[in-house]
Image (spheres, rainbow, N blue to C red):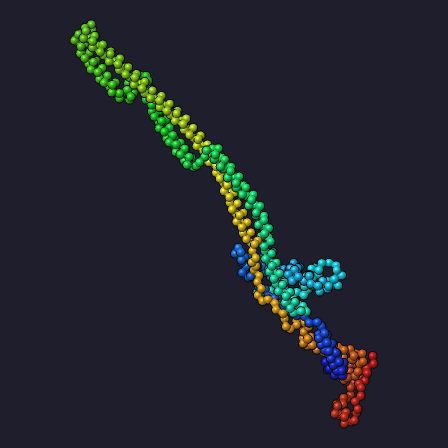
Length: 465
């Protein structure tokens, strides 16, 4: 079946097509007029695109995530927000609503849950694709009621947004309150341990005392080195005063008295040599000169022994001083080591206080921040355009329905016309004879020829099945 045949069929069945179109348009118009009118109120909210917390000033990277706006849409469409709307408008206390609930559910279930489901069915939340705008629409039979519900959803969403942000901070603040108490106790115990240790050790300033004791240790070390040098020198001089080399000792040789005695001995020996040449051995001058020499030598020996004894005594004193300095140095070294241990122990206690103080300060800062955030009523969501009672209903759309019914009626009319033709097949053209009867068509008389021949219009031939 080609297009020309279809057009011939529609031309022949135009009454069916026209009737179907009229009925479709009439029914659609009647239904659109009889349907209850619904009004849609829209509230526009804007989400802070900067992503900065109004209290702490910290950037919120979560708002940069692609799913953030979808999350906000889910929050608005949640049962939690719907229940807040019911509580804010006191819908569960309305007598008409209560009667509707009892008649619809026979009193079973919770009226708030039933209302929340009804509200969410008529709620339409649409986020903008290119901006941070969210449109909250609510459809209802009463324009004022629809506007009130839409605005209530926006307010409840803002309140829920604040609540979702504040509740974790409040829980964190409660947790940090306990932590601050425990850390304060730890800090006080650390301070008590430090104070008790200082009192037990009598420590006022370890560093200053340690500096003094170290200076004293260095001084004793220097004195010991000097004493050791002097003792070694004295021992060497003492060894030189022992034996036959006593007269070669620097201490003996440099003694003025011994030098004088040696000079006197030399003079006496010179006189004795002169006298021994002049007189005999038994002569009084000889005996006197010899006695003088013996006396001088005896005195020289006594003085030499005295000088040697002085050197030995000096060596003993220096050695004793060396021992005393060494003992004092060891004692001072032990004292410095004790002070170092005290300083290390004091440093450990001080470090414990510093760590406890640092932990206490950080926790206190976190507690303060969490407490401020927990008391905040600031939100990153604001109402841009509140809903107003709509004047024109959003549904049904009569004009649009009529236009669609015309299109649908035409399609149905064409379909019904083709179906009627299929049930009662007629010969509409020469192509029908050629296709169905398979006989050649010798001639076709045009309309003007048929009028000249006086042929009357007759119904087309039916095609037998």
